[in-house]
Length: 284
Image: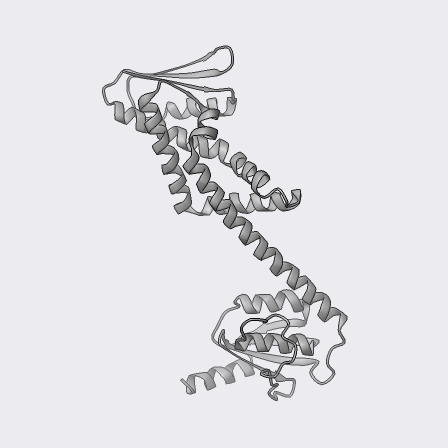
């Protein structure tokens, strides 16, 4: 026989546990709820002989309960203690990013679940009473450490995204404050792939991008896209027609859309598109 008393005052956790205990495929299990001086107690008596099955079942149930009811608060605590210098709005954005990422990151969820499950199974096999809050905040060091590392990665992603958004805003202000080029007020960007792009004016004459003087975005390495980008910022045309030859919109094209907005249009099947498709196949 094995007994376990789970102590908590969270009525939502108690309801969750009692409902899911009834779903366990275990016979000879008896559950009662009693209130003592400090805690409400969920008391489980198991009169069967497969103690390992009982411990594993209860550990699995409690591991899911901890993730469900404690993980958000743990993440919130980590953000407030380790990244206190962010504004309340930024902290909320980081927490939302962490929670949404965790929901789609099965590998991380599975690792965290195993950390909790292993700690629970070891503890329950040696003890008859478990104060749930105390167990979460003082005995799950590996799980909390995993969350700390995870939140740190989310903070890095948040900073990178924020810097990107700030750069986009600055560039939008720049092009909106600059007078457009009269000679190149309308240009065509022939985007063959992410390694090859060409610029032409409205008369289909090539525009040189290799000697662009303003290296606004690319201060470290200069790819073909970097030079095209810098040229577009320098010319600041009123209209940009993007012709996607063999590709779909990627990060480069999406960035141009964010900056130039309604000045930009995309097509895939005009005469220019068809011409460069034929030319690219010919040159392969």
